Image 1: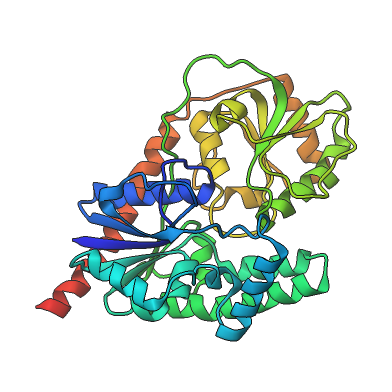
Image 2: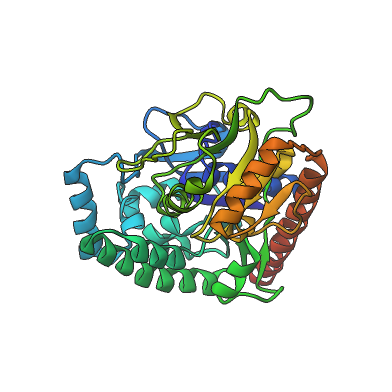
Length: 388
Protein backbone atom coordinates (compact mmCIF):
# COMPACT_ATOMS: atom_id res chain seq x y z
CA UNK A 1 0.00 0.00 0.00
CA UNK A 2 1.42 3.39 -1.04
CA UNK A 3 0.35 6.29 1.21
CA UNK A 4 0.91 10.02 0.77
CA UNK A 5 1.65 11.59 4.14
CA UNK A 6 0.41 15.18 3.74
CA UNK A 7 1.87 17.49 6.38
CA UNK A 8 2.70 21.15 6.86
CA UNK A 9 6.47 20.67 7.43
CA UNK A 10 8.33 17.63 6.09
CA UNK A 11 10.97 15.93 8.27
CA UNK A 12 14.48 17.37 8.05
CA UNK A 13 16.02 15.10 10.67
CA UNK A 14 16.29 17.78 13.36
CA UNK A 15 13.38 16.61 15.56
CA UNK A 16 13.37 20.07 17.11
CA UNK A 17 9.76 20.01 18.34
CA UNK A 18 7.22 17.59 19.74
CA UNK A 19 5.31 17.78 16.46
CA UNK A 20 8.37 16.63 14.51
CA UNK A 21 9.10 13.85 16.99
CA UNK A 22 5.51 12.63 16.70
CA UNK A 23 5.65 12.70 12.90
CA UNK A 24 8.84 10.64 12.87
CA UNK A 25 7.28 8.03 15.17
CA UNK A 26 4.10 7.78 13.07
CA UNK A 27 5.91 7.54 9.72
CA UNK A 28 8.24 4.87 11.12
CA UNK A 29 5.26 2.86 12.42
CA UNK A 30 3.50 3.06 9.05
CA UNK A 31 6.62 1.70 7.37
CA UNK A 32 7.04 -1.06 9.97
CA UNK A 33 3.48 -2.11 9.09
CA UNK A 34 4.56 -2.56 5.46
CA UNK A 35 3.22 0.65 3.90
CA UNK A 36 5.25 2.64 1.43
CA UNK A 37 5.13 6.25 2.64
CA UNK A 38 5.83 9.36 0.57
CA UNK A 39 5.78 12.64 2.48
CA UNK A 40 4.54 15.89 0.91
CA UNK A 41 4.67 19.36 2.43
CA UNK A 42 6.86 22.41 2.98
CA UNK A 43 10.26 22.65 4.64
CA UNK A 44 11.90 25.19 6.92
CA UNK A 45 14.02 27.70 4.94
CA UNK A 46 17.59 26.51 4.53
CA UNK A 47 16.80 22.93 5.52
CA UNK A 48 16.75 19.79 3.40
CA UNK A 49 14.47 16.77 3.60
CA UNK A 50 15.98 13.93 5.63
CA UNK A 51 14.60 11.33 3.19
CA UNK A 52 14.61 13.09 -0.19
CA UNK A 53 13.83 9.97 -2.22
CA UNK A 54 10.50 9.61 -0.41
CA UNK A 55 9.67 13.31 0.03
CA UNK A 56 7.97 15.87 -2.21
CA UNK A 57 8.90 19.40 -1.07
CA UNK A 58 6.55 22.22 -2.05
CA UNK A 59 9.05 24.91 -1.08
CA UNK A 60 10.68 26.57 1.89
CA UNK A 61 8.43 28.38 4.34
CA UNK A 62 8.57 29.82 7.86
CA UNK A 63 5.14 29.66 9.50
CA UNK A 64 6.17 30.85 12.96
CA UNK A 65 4.02 33.77 14.03
CA UNK A 66 6.42 34.99 16.72
CA UNK A 67 9.28 35.56 14.27
CA UNK A 68 7.16 37.10 11.49
CA UNK A 69 7.21 40.82 10.77
CA UNK A 70 4.18 42.97 11.53
CA UNK A 71 3.51 43.26 7.79
CA UNK A 72 3.63 39.47 7.36
CA UNK A 73 1.22 38.96 10.25
CA UNK A 74 -1.22 41.50 8.81
CA UNK A 75 -0.94 39.83 5.40
CA UNK A 76 -1.80 36.47 6.91
CA UNK A 77 -4.76 37.93 8.80
CA UNK A 78 -6.04 39.67 5.67
CA UNK A 79 -5.75 36.53 3.55
CA UNK A 80 -7.48 34.49 6.23
CA UNK A 81 -10.41 36.91 6.38
CA UNK A 82 -10.76 37.06 2.59
CA UNK A 83 -10.43 33.32 2.00
CA UNK A 84 -12.43 32.02 4.94
CA UNK A 85 -9.49 29.82 5.93
CA UNK A 86 -8.01 29.55 9.38
CA UNK A 87 -4.98 31.68 10.23
CA UNK A 88 -2.93 28.48 10.58
CA UNK A 89 -3.89 27.14 7.15
CA UNK A 90 -3.60 30.39 5.22
CA UNK A 91 0.12 30.54 6.08
CA UNK A 92 0.57 27.46 3.87
CA UNK A 93 -1.10 29.04 0.84
CA UNK A 94 2.32 30.06 -0.43
CA UNK A 95 1.80 27.94 -3.55
CA UNK A 96 -1.22 27.56 -5.83
CA UNK A 97 -3.62 24.64 -6.08
CA UNK A 98 -2.12 23.94 -9.50
CA UNK A 99 1.36 23.62 -8.00
CA UNK A 100 0.12 21.26 -5.30
CA UNK A 101 -1.81 19.16 -7.80
CA UNK A 102 1.30 18.85 -9.96
CA UNK A 103 3.24 17.71 -6.90
CA UNK A 104 0.57 15.13 -6.09
CA UNK A 105 0.82 13.82 -9.63
CA UNK A 106 4.61 13.59 -9.34
CA UNK A 107 4.26 11.47 -6.22
CA UNK A 108 3.08 8.66 -8.49
CA UNK A 109 0.17 6.28 -8.06
CA UNK A 110 -0.85 5.97 -4.42
CA UNK A 111 -3.71 4.35 -2.54
CA UNK A 112 -4.65 6.93 0.05
CA UNK A 113 -3.71 9.95 2.13
CA UNK A 114 -2.53 10.28 5.69
CA UNK A 115 -3.72 13.79 6.54
CA UNK A 116 -1.31 14.82 9.26
CA UNK A 117 -3.06 17.39 11.45
CA UNK A 118 -5.49 20.04 10.27
CA UNK A 119 -3.23 22.80 8.94
CA UNK A 120 -2.14 21.37 5.56
CA UNK A 121 -5.39 19.46 5.05
CA UNK A 122 -7.35 22.65 5.72
CA UNK A 123 -5.21 24.68 3.30
CA UNK A 124 -5.65 22.31 0.34
CA UNK A 125 -8.74 20.39 1.35
CA UNK A 126 -10.41 20.08 -2.06
CA UNK A 127 -7.28 18.54 -3.59
CA UNK A 128 -7.16 15.78 -0.98
CA UNK A 129 -10.62 14.34 -1.46
CA UNK A 130 -10.03 12.05 -4.44
CA UNK A 131 -8.75 9.09 -2.40
CA UNK A 132 -9.58 7.51 0.97
CA UNK A 133 -7.76 9.01 3.91
CA UNK A 134 -6.57 8.49 7.44
CA UNK A 135 -6.67 11.61 9.63
CA UNK A 136 -4.06 12.14 12.38
CA UNK A 137 -5.36 14.63 14.95
CA UNK A 138 -2.31 15.71 16.94
CA UNK A 139 -4.60 17.91 19.03
CA UNK A 140 -8.23 18.92 19.16
CA UNK A 141 -7.28 22.19 17.55
CA UNK A 142 -10.57 24.04 18.04
CA UNK A 143 -10.44 23.41 21.80
CA UNK A 144 -6.84 24.63 21.96
CA UNK A 145 -7.85 27.77 20.06
CA UNK A 146 -10.72 28.31 22.49
CA UNK A 147 -8.32 28.04 25.44
CA UNK A 148 -5.91 30.40 23.71
CA UNK A 149 -8.74 32.92 23.31
CA UNK A 150 -9.52 32.75 27.02
CA UNK A 151 -5.84 33.33 27.88
CA UNK A 152 -5.23 36.09 25.31
CA UNK A 153 -4.22 39.46 26.70
CA UNK A 154 -5.62 41.73 23.98
CA UNK A 155 -9.03 42.05 22.34
CA UNK A 156 -7.75 41.58 18.77
CA UNK A 157 -5.86 38.41 19.65
CA UNK A 158 -8.84 37.10 21.58
CA UNK A 159 -11.17 37.67 18.62
CA UNK A 160 -8.68 36.04 16.25
CA UNK A 161 -8.46 32.92 18.41
CA UNK A 162 -12.26 32.77 18.68
CA UNK A 163 -12.49 32.87 14.89
CA UNK A 164 -9.87 30.09 14.68
CA UNK A 165 -11.84 27.99 17.14
CA UNK A 166 -15.08 28.35 15.17
CA UNK A 167 -13.50 27.52 11.81
CA UNK A 168 -11.29 24.74 13.15
CA UNK A 169 -14.30 22.96 14.64
CA UNK A 170 -15.96 22.91 11.22
CA UNK A 171 -12.83 21.68 9.42
CA UNK A 172 -12.05 19.03 12.04
CA UNK A 173 -15.59 17.68 11.87
CA UNK A 174 -15.36 17.50 8.08
CA UNK A 175 -11.96 15.77 8.06
CA UNK A 176 -13.12 13.22 10.65
CA UNK A 177 -16.33 12.55 8.72
CA UNK A 178 -14.49 11.91 5.46
CA UNK A 179 -11.66 9.88 6.96
CA UNK A 180 -11.88 6.11 6.87
CA UNK A 181 -10.17 6.09 10.26
CA UNK A 182 -8.97 8.72 12.73
CA UNK A 183 -5.85 8.58 14.88
CA UNK A 184 -5.62 10.74 18.00
CA UNK A 185 -2.75 11.06 20.45
CA UNK A 186 -4.90 11.03 23.60
CA UNK A 187 -7.96 8.99 24.58
CA UNK A 188 -10.11 12.00 25.52
CA UNK A 189 -9.53 13.54 22.08
CA UNK A 190 -11.54 10.74 20.44
CA UNK A 191 -14.71 11.86 22.22
CA UNK A 192 -13.94 15.54 21.67
CA UNK A 193 -13.75 14.87 17.91
CA UNK A 194 -16.89 12.74 17.89
CA UNK A 195 -15.14 9.50 16.84
CA UNK A 196 -15.00 7.62 20.15
CA UNK A 197 -15.80 4.17 18.73
CA UNK A 198 -13.28 1.46 17.89
CA UNK A 199 -14.38 1.23 14.26
CA UNK A 200 -13.77 4.96 13.78
CA UNK A 201 -10.61 5.79 15.73
CA UNK A 202 -7.68 4.67 17.83
CA UNK A 203 -5.07 6.33 20.03
CA UNK A 204 -1.44 6.34 18.86
CA UNK A 205 0.91 5.88 21.83
CA UNK A 206 4.07 7.70 20.76
CA UNK A 207 7.78 7.19 21.32
CA UNK A 208 10.86 9.29 20.76
CA UNK A 209 13.61 8.17 18.42
CA UNK A 210 16.55 7.80 20.77
CA UNK A 211 17.19 4.73 22.98
CA UNK A 212 16.62 4.87 26.70
CA UNK A 213 19.40 6.45 28.79
CA UNK A 214 21.67 4.09 30.69
CA UNK A 215 24.26 4.61 33.38
CA UNK A 216 24.72 7.28 36.08
CA UNK A 217 23.90 10.94 35.50
CA UNK A 218 25.70 14.14 36.39
CA UNK A 219 23.23 16.47 38.15
CA UNK A 220 23.66 20.14 37.21
CA UNK A 221 20.43 21.61 38.62
CA UNK A 222 17.37 20.69 40.65
CA UNK A 223 14.80 20.98 37.83
CA UNK A 224 14.90 21.55 34.08
CA UNK A 225 12.26 22.48 31.52
CA UNK A 226 12.60 22.73 27.76
CA UNK A 227 9.97 23.57 25.18
CA UNK A 228 8.62 25.75 22.43
CA UNK A 229 7.34 28.42 24.80
CA UNK A 230 6.06 30.63 22.00
CA UNK A 231 3.37 27.99 21.33
CA UNK A 232 0.41 29.29 23.29
CA UNK A 233 -0.58 26.09 25.18
CA UNK A 234 3.03 25.70 26.33
CA UNK A 235 3.14 29.38 27.33
CA UNK A 236 0.00 28.93 29.43
CA UNK A 237 1.65 26.05 31.32
CA UNK A 238 4.86 28.01 31.81
CA UNK A 239 2.97 31.01 33.15
CA UNK A 240 1.20 28.71 35.63
CA UNK A 241 4.49 27.18 36.75
CA UNK A 242 6.34 30.48 37.17
CA UNK A 243 3.40 32.32 38.69
CA UNK A 244 1.87 29.65 40.91
CA UNK A 245 4.45 26.93 41.65
CA UNK A 246 7.83 28.68 41.74
CA UNK A 247 6.89 31.12 44.56
CA UNK A 248 6.46 28.07 46.85
CA UNK A 249 10.00 26.78 46.17
CA UNK A 250 12.85 27.55 48.52
CA UNK A 251 15.22 30.31 47.26
CA UNK A 252 18.15 27.97 46.58
CA UNK A 253 16.14 25.58 44.38
CA UNK A 254 17.82 25.73 40.94
CA UNK A 255 15.62 25.72 37.84
CA UNK A 256 16.92 25.94 34.27
CA UNK A 257 14.49 26.72 31.45
CA UNK A 258 15.63 26.15 27.86
CA UNK A 259 13.99 27.11 24.59
CA UNK A 260 13.02 30.30 22.79
CA UNK A 261 11.32 32.57 25.30
CA UNK A 262 8.62 35.07 24.28
CA UNK A 263 8.97 38.62 25.55
CA UNK A 264 7.61 39.39 28.97
CA UNK A 265 8.44 36.07 30.64
CA UNK A 266 10.37 36.67 33.85
CA UNK A 267 10.71 35.29 37.36
CA UNK A 268 11.69 36.95 40.63
CA UNK A 269 12.87 33.61 42.05
CA UNK A 270 16.69 33.71 42.42
CA UNK A 271 17.08 30.10 41.29
CA UNK A 272 15.34 30.46 37.91
CA UNK A 273 17.69 30.71 34.92
CA UNK A 274 16.59 31.13 31.30
CA UNK A 275 19.28 29.50 29.16
CA UNK A 276 17.87 29.83 25.62
CA UNK A 277 18.64 27.17 23.03
CA UNK A 278 20.72 24.16 24.09
CA UNK A 279 22.71 21.92 21.72
CA UNK A 280 21.39 18.63 23.13
CA UNK A 281 17.90 18.60 24.65
CA UNK A 282 18.24 15.09 26.02
CA UNK A 283 21.54 15.86 27.75
CA UNK A 284 20.00 19.05 29.14
CA UNK A 285 17.05 17.34 30.83
CA UNK A 286 19.26 14.44 31.98
CA UNK A 287 21.26 16.94 34.00
CA UNK A 288 18.28 17.75 36.23
CA UNK A 289 17.36 15.97 39.43
CA UNK A 290 13.64 16.16 38.56
CA UNK A 291 11.57 17.18 35.54
CA UNK A 292 8.47 19.37 36.03
CA UNK A 293 5.75 18.37 33.52
CA UNK A 294 3.60 21.48 33.57
CA UNK A 295 0.91 21.26 30.89
CA UNK A 296 -2.32 23.01 31.91
CA UNK A 297 -3.86 23.63 28.47
CA UNK A 298 -4.15 22.11 25.03
CA UNK A 299 -4.98 18.60 23.90
CA UNK A 300 -3.10 15.71 22.34
CA UNK A 301 -0.07 14.15 23.99
CA UNK A 302 2.92 15.74 25.70
CA UNK A 303 6.08 14.42 24.02
CA UNK A 304 8.19 15.75 26.89
CA UNK A 305 6.26 13.45 29.22
CA UNK A 306 6.98 10.45 26.99
CA UNK A 307 10.67 11.34 26.72
CA UNK A 308 10.95 11.79 30.49
CA UNK A 309 9.39 8.37 31.08
CA UNK A 310 11.59 6.74 28.41
CA UNK A 311 14.66 8.18 30.14
CA UNK A 312 13.42 6.98 33.52
CA UNK A 313 13.83 10.45 35.05
CA UNK A 314 11.97 11.50 38.22
CA UNK A 315 9.10 13.89 37.48
CA UNK A 316 6.24 15.85 38.96
CA UNK A 317 3.32 16.19 36.58
CA UNK A 318 -0.01 17.91 36.26
CA UNK A 319 -2.91 15.68 35.33
CA UNK A 320 -3.04 17.35 31.93
CA UNK A 321 0.58 16.34 31.25
CA UNK A 322 -0.41 12.67 31.29
CA UNK A 323 -2.80 12.87 28.33
CA UNK A 324 -2.34 9.84 26.10
CA UNK A 325 -0.26 7.98 28.72
CA UNK A 326 -1.65 4.66 29.97
CA UNK A 327 1.22 3.79 32.30
CA UNK A 328 2.84 6.09 34.84
CA UNK A 329 6.22 5.06 36.32
CA UNK A 330 6.70 4.90 40.06
CA UNK A 331 8.96 7.98 40.15
CA UNK A 332 6.27 10.31 38.75
CA UNK A 333 4.17 12.30 41.23
CA UNK A 334 0.90 13.76 39.95
CA UNK A 335 -0.72 16.88 41.38
CA UNK A 336 -2.44 20.01 40.11
CA UNK A 337 -2.07 21.92 43.36
CA UNK A 338 0.76 24.49 43.02
CA UNK A 339 1.99 24.20 46.61
CA UNK A 340 1.91 20.40 46.51
CA UNK A 341 3.69 20.50 43.14
CA UNK A 342 6.49 22.58 44.66
CA UNK A 343 6.80 20.27 47.67
CA UNK A 344 6.98 17.22 45.39
CA UNK A 345 9.73 18.86 43.31
CA UNK A 346 11.82 19.56 46.39
CA UNK A 347 11.31 16.02 47.71
CA UNK A 348 12.25 14.42 44.37
CA UNK A 349 15.38 16.58 44.04
CA UNK A 350 16.46 15.61 47.57
CA UNK A 351 16.02 11.88 46.94
CA UNK A 352 16.71 11.14 43.23
CA UNK A 353 15.11 7.89 42.07
CA UNK A 354 15.72 6.98 38.42
CA UNK A 355 14.00 3.95 36.90
CA UNK A 356 14.56 1.81 33.80
CA UNK A 357 12.53 3.45 31.03
CA UNK A 358 13.04 0.71 28.43
CA UNK A 359 9.94 -1.21 29.48
CA UNK A 360 7.82 1.91 29.00
CA UNK A 361 9.35 2.41 25.53
CA UNK A 362 8.67 -1.19 24.48
CA UNK A 363 5.08 -0.97 25.71
CA UNK A 364 4.52 2.23 23.72
CA UNK A 365 5.98 0.76 20.50
CA UNK A 366 3.82 -2.37 20.74
CA UNK A 367 0.63 -0.36 21.26
CA UNK A 368 1.57 2.12 18.51
CA UNK A 369 2.11 -0.65 15.97
CA UNK A 370 -1.20 -2.31 16.87
CA UNK A 371 -3.12 0.96 16.41
CA UNK A 372 -1.44 1.70 13.07
CA UNK A 373 -2.24 -1.80 11.82
CA UNK A 374 -5.90 -1.31 12.72
CA UNK A 375 -6.10 1.92 10.73
CA UNK A 376 -4.37 0.40 7.71
CA UNK A 377 -6.79 -2.52 7.77
CA UNK A 378 -9.71 -0.09 7.66
CA UNK A 379 -8.14 1.80 4.77
CA UNK A 380 -7.26 -1.41 2.94
CA UNK A 381 -10.81 -2.74 3.27
CA UNK A 382 -12.17 0.46 1.70
CA UNK A 383 -9.60 0.26 -1.10
CA UNK A 384 -10.62 -3.34 -1.88
CA UNK A 385 -14.27 -2.27 -2.05
CA UNK A 386 -13.46 0.62 -4.39
CA UNK A 387 -11.22 -1.30 -6.77
CA UNK A 388 -12.88 -4.74 -6.65
